[in-house]
Amino acid sequence: MNTRRALAIAGASVVGVAAAVTAAATGLAAHLARVTVTVDRGLERPIAVRRVVSGEVPASGGPAGESSSGESLAVWISGDGAAGRGRQSLLFDAPGAMPGEGTGAAPQGHARLGPVLARNGQDVLRAVERVDSGELVPGVTGRMVGWWYTAPEELGYRVEEISYETELGPMTAWIVHPKRARKKRWAVHVHGRGASPAETFRGIEPFARAGITSMIISYRNDLGQPAGVNGRYGMGISESRDVDAAIAEARSRGAERVTLMGWSMGGTASLLAVARGIHRDVLDGIVLESPGADWPGILREKATDHRLPTWIADLGMSLLERGTVASGEPGGVDFAELRPEALARGIDVPALLLASPNDRFVPWHGSRVLAAERPDLVQFVSIPGAGHVRLWNADPETWEQTVLGFVSRLPKPGWRGQ
Image (cartoon, rainbow, N blue to C red; front, top):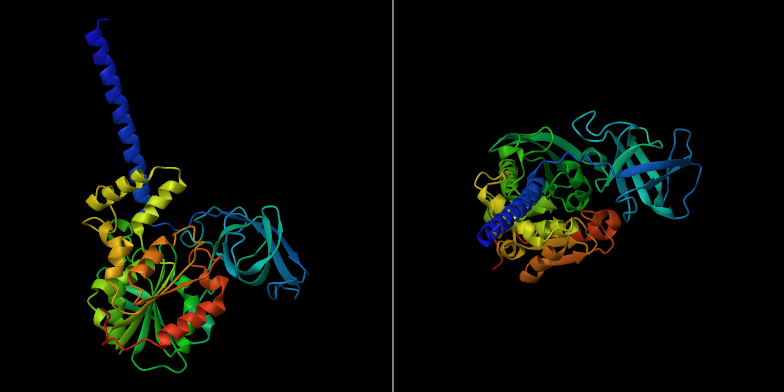
């Protein structure tokens, strides 16, 4: 083989390898991009119930629930999130059930678990405060969530189920009427990505105590609600238009002041509604729990978690921006406006930001930058040891008192920050 031919073959091989590497990298980036905007019905069931015990009185952590015979209950569980701080809910399936059976892909069982009482290797013992549905027995699998309440009526206030009009059609919402309502003051509560409106129920109490009427909304892609463009999420951008539609509904019912309460991606949507919503003139403040305040940072963190270089995340964002990977935004996702510096520029009302350094799902870096950019308007509160959207669960008294104090002191929306 002559030298020229050998070099040609070698060059072709290098090109082939480079093309293969590029294709693999693009595939990984596209996968990360798709996962970020794909609607997830919560198919993972990382928690396993090992043993249910009765008759034991917990040494700490509050009272245990009761079995049908009146005995105290506790449960040994293991898996991701089993040892989360404070009170947590376990969503679970029947033993042997395949995720997705029943209604949608949602687990059918719901148990409220108290704080961790004991540990045995990977297993933890938690008191069972209440089983709302399903049969909690060894062998069931599920996942831990912070939702706690299963219906807004459990809060003890009058609740009204309504629908509100959006660009995609009617969406379901609930209005919670406080016992002593302050006329014309409302709040709109927005849950996070992949959650349900139940996520927000535990945040209603301080608003009700302040006399604020609360509107808990569903939005696009929620179970039973209209699908978004391509049946995918818009990273809070598309969803902010549903928040704006909810504000319009509140106004039509007499609201002259509206406070937004956003959880996780619901926080992103709420921030964008404050920055550019068509009803921003009635907004008097915003409360954010573990908000998605830095989506580029979140995607880079996800890449790192999977031992991928951060440029894979950057490539994935580029694919979403150009629309090569379809999202809930027909023109593509503008990640520039989802950076904390950009989101901070849109804040012109007082904001309460609650975040935890132990949030593994949405690192709190974006929240800290958001607060640092607008110290004149943002009150930053941290509860260490809490997971993502679990600050209430870790310390409900501090959470509720902080939120109550904030919303009680909000000025009228005629004032806008500079």
